[in-house]
Amino acid sequence: MDSQVQNSVVALLAQRPRTVEVGPFVIGWDPTSDSRFISYATPRPDTTITAADVTELVAAFRRINRVPRLEYVTSCAPGLERQLLEAGFTVEARHQYLVCSPESLAPAVPPSGFEIVEPTTDEARAGGLAAQNEAFGGDPTATPADVARVRRTQDSGGVVMVARADDGTYVGGGQSSPPGAGISEVAGIGVRPGFRRRGIAAALTSAITARAFDTGVSAAWLEAGGDDSWRVYQRVGYVPTGRRLYIALG
View 1 (tube, rainbow, N blue to C red):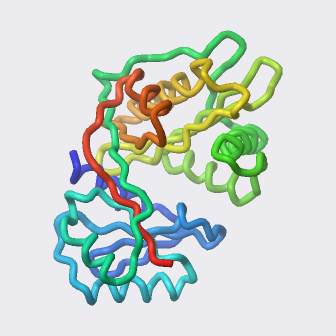
View 2 (cartoon, rainbow, N blue to C red):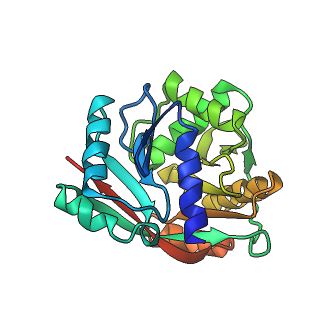
């Protein structure tokens, strides 16, 4: 599964508005955003990587005016972390990823007074994004570029869902990537602080995963940001599987 997840990350970055191939690395970047979490690199699994490759990778990031940063499954490039540390990179995080199959998925329904829907208008997309941004500690707003990225995800075969109260208030959202290497990444599951611990995050995760399976993928994977989200994901059928590294320069 490690190689399949890593290949799915390569495929995901290849779907960014711009892609830069640097030896064994792929940089996916979006000229409309300077977020380090949108524009980053990953290695192709099981390739030979040299110090010169790392130097060229840093230079390529400098040319596009982005922070040199990588996300990858550690087992697929076992010597890369040492090379990056020697080049001055700093580890941001080490996460365990979880995988769900159609057989292990446990459906979860939203609590009374809420619904989980796919946004079909920019107003709904912006509402879901604003809720996600607030959930992760940001401003409860969404720019036109943010909305365009969501629309592009949907147009490319990814899944986007929002959680909405009966009064029309958007309280959460999340998405899955377009299929890559036969699987999809589920990400960005977020619920506004005032609406947590009601089962909305589980319902979002379950609905997004089920819809991803409807597109034909054989598995979905994600990462948990803490104990609470870990329990939510395991409750709907995700199982700890492998490890990923986040590492950046500067």
